[in-house]
Length: 315
Image (cartoon, helix red, strand yellow):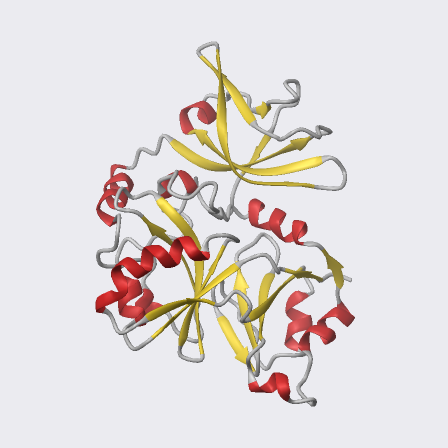
C-alpha cells in the first residue's frame, strides 16, 4: 500500500463565532483572514506586542464558524489572549476540543484513495473541500498529505446510512502512529509552538516569514511593526533547520555546537525518533555558524554529527 492513515488525536481547537469573527481575527493574526473561505484554510501565528510567537495555528471555516487548530495545551492560552481584545466585537471564542476527530492521510497513492471517496480533492496546499460531516485539507509536505476532519456534531452522524469515509480509507491504506506524521512535519519545516515554547521566538527564527505563515501585505496586527522591521532588514541571525542523525541515547536529547571554544546549546522546536534509532529535529541554529560549516551534534553523542537537510522553501 502506498498510502498511510494516521489518527491525529492530539490537538486543541478553538471556535470563533459571530458576524465580526474574521474582522476581529484580522487584527490579531499574521495571516490575512480576508482570504479565508470554505475552500481555503490558512496557516498563521498569534504574536505578542514584542513580536514573539504565542502560537502557530491552522485556521479553517466550516458551517459559518472559524476554527483554530492549535498544539495540545494551547487553547486556553490563545483564548485568554483573544478574549482581551474581543469585548468590542460581535464575536465569541469557545474551546471545542471534542468537536472533531482528525486524521492524516499521506503517500503517493493518497490522492487516488481520496478521489474515489470525495467528489473533489484539493490540489494546492491549504485548499479544502467539504463532504457531509467531513472536511478535507491539503497540507504541505515532500510527499502528498491531507488532513481529514470528521465533525462529531454533524446531522449525518445520526444517519445510519451515512458513508463512513474513514473505514473506506482504512481498507485501502496502511496504518501508522502520529510519529510518522510528525516526521513529515519536521521534514517540511512546519514548526509548531506549544506551552513550553510560547512567546520565546520571533517569527523569522521559525522561518514563518519564508513559509507563508506571515502575510506582509495585510494590515496591522499585534506585533506587526516589529515583525515587519525584522523582515525588511533582511539579516536573520538565526533560522530553523531540519537536522537528523543516528542516536541510541535514552536520555533527553539536546543539540549543541562549539563557538569560541564554548559549548553552545541550540533550541529544539520539534523532535521525533524512528524505530531504527534515528532522530529528526527542527532546531534553531545561528546562520553564520551554518554558513561557515560548524558541526552540530547531539549533546549526548559528541561524535555523532547531525546532517542538515534543505527545507521545501529557501532559508
